[in-house]
Image 1 (cartoon, rainbow, N blue to C red):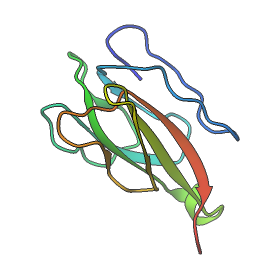
Image 2: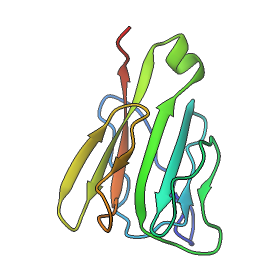
Image 3: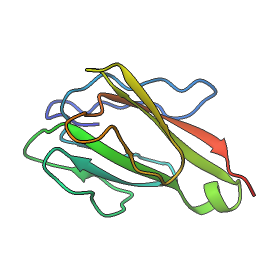
Image 4: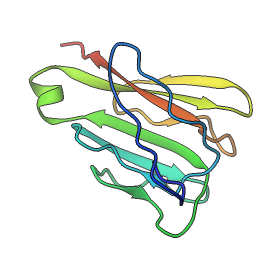
Length: 124
């Protein structure tokens, strides 16, 4: 995660995944070393294309409006695991669980202020 200063690196996975740091604005983010692809929307933008690289800005920060994350490759096809996203809106202290590949957003003008990733077995 990057908000214009030093990048914030956050571990993903484990039995009890941790929440990221709280944030109001982000420049962007990237998931490294995992078989995820994702899209994002920041305040004033539409949903980005699917990517496995950095998504966001290099010259400004904005609130994160929504994101979509899904597994691919061996994680999905051989191991049968999906990627669940849990998001938090600090202004209203709301939480939301979003299954693999679904759009995760609280709606217009209600931004994401924290997230965590939870792996789970897909139904076969």
